[in-house]
Image 1 (spheres, helix red, strand yellow):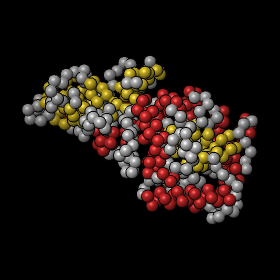
Image 2 (spheres, rainbow, N blue to C red):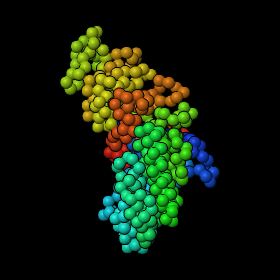
Image 3 (cartoon, one colour):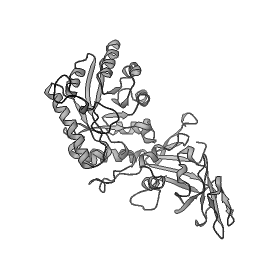
Image 4 (cartoon, rainbow, N blue to C red):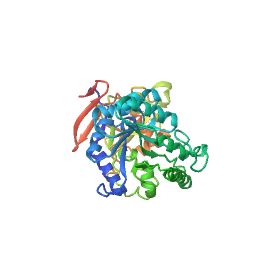
Length: 404
């Protein structure tokens, strides 16, 4: 590692959070408990898909779920035998790679199903697929309202029956995704989903794995958990805010973005800093610290003159515009501050030690976005340091070409 800016990922905390999800939805030993497809899209929300997946598989995850085929191939190379589901769209021309890599694709119309069936037959194997049902998100999926009602040939259930008859294709699962607008609309989506499955069952089509709930859904709607849940953000410390289980969930923050002060200099009253001089030193002047981190590292430009960081246990405001590679903070109120001091930018917070870190919820408020966006934005040039047992186990530096 050749820079002071780093992103620590506590793999023990990730494992703890997954165990808590298991406890919430039912013991792994309970045959009625739903399976868990751990969501590792966007490089495990920026934490690192392969090291995180390794820990979660060890903890008993049943399936790995990603957004696109390249993410699935990355995991397949690391985990030859793990079930891997691509939840997003896989274009037909990439079905040969999906079949070769034994990846479970998501499909939502007959043409896709036929193309995947044809490719699997050509390869002499059976392709596994999950069907996406659009119950209200209006993104991807088979939308029941666009078909005839009932179970006739022109119905959505009839389409599922035709897809299920294709050779070399196994429809293992079916799923939908809640918009989480309000409880009434969530209930309407779930009812639409179950009506379709009832219609399919009347035609002899039954799915081994029915799944609806993401991190919020699994904590908010026990009755919607069905055969599998899809925990994602909750494993990475992003706890749903408005569920009955939130307060007792004991979800830990597994990440900590930090750097060190590269320069401290006094600022005279009225002096400006950075582009456009959006901040000028107050009467009496102050001390300005330069940090070697900027928006190219995921420390967003919208945090300029809004956010604060933690230095020697005290908050210090970000002043001036956040630049691509650097930003500046006012450390005039931090006694004893010096060059080389560690600065916490994000995470590192603990419920039993208030004020120790910078909660992601607070960062999201400053940036006027959601917490997932914050953690997914940490740049790849920031080295990841993976901790186990409180000690660094592996360092991963994308710029230097992998683990070091």
